[in-house]
Structure formats: C-alpha cells, structure tokens
Length: 178
Image 1 (cartoon, rainbow, N blue to C red):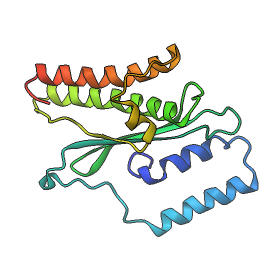
Image 2: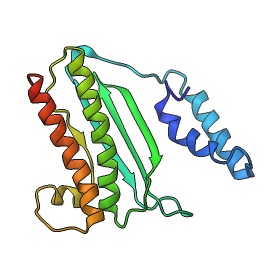
Image 3: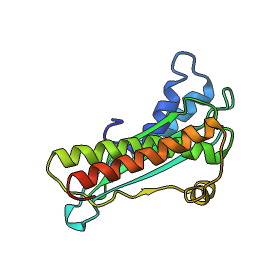
C-alpha cells in the first residue's frame, strides 16, 4: 500500500517504529490512519502526460524533529506528468546544527535522486530540460549565491548539493540538452 498511497507512507513508517511495544496512543494513531483510509478510498496516483509538466522535485526537512537523537527528518518527492514517481522520508544520518544545514542535507539527498533520474531518462533517449527542485528555507536561498567561508563539516554538506547539481548539468550537456 505504501507504493500506491504516498499520503500515508510517513505515518505508517513512523507507526512501524513502535510495532514491538505499542501503547494506547499508538493504537489510537493506527486507528486514525485506518479511518483516513476508509474516508479516502478514491485517492490514487494519477499522471497527465498532456499537461506538459515534465519532471520536478520538492524537498523539505524538519530540523531536530527526533526528541531522542535530535536528528532531523528529510523528505523529498519527484513528480512526472503531475504524478509521484519517487518519494522518501527518513532520519538524517548526522545531527544538523541549524535548520539551514538540515535543509542542505535534504537538498543533497534530493539532488542525488534527481541526477539519477536525469541520467536514467537520458539513457532511455529522452532529452530533458533542467529539473527544478523546490525548497522553502530562506537560509539556503540566501547562501546559494554567497561566497562565505564555512567549517569543514558545513562545506561538505554544501559541496554535496552543489556538486550534485553541477554533475547533472555536465551530464545533461553531454547528452544534448538539460
């Protein structure tokens, strides 16, 4: 079901963490998910090739959302023709020191998937325009064009995003269009 109902994937994955030792609250949340499914039987993934929407991606993070480990949660989705073709939500591997750093980590994960999708589509013979990645963090937006010096750790996160994007551009130009 998680493959066809991305609207519940995060909730179900979160609930699965407590499957071995659920509390009353967990059971209430599970029932809430079931009630939601009963109320939304016609929700499904749809694709509209005539709309000309192509590929696009969005990413976000929730800074320090895990109260036990203080790790942030990252998520992204990629759409083709208006319908989801790839999505994920997961805890970040390291603790982010700021919301901007957490957003960079999420953007890095998303950009790697976008580069892979772009490469796959190129190998299948499709010439793609640049694939937009949407995000909502003002710190990342302000930083993308700046030349500030960062600590080694911060530079690595930032470099992962920028190198992923530059790799997509280079591969796209070699294939005859991005």
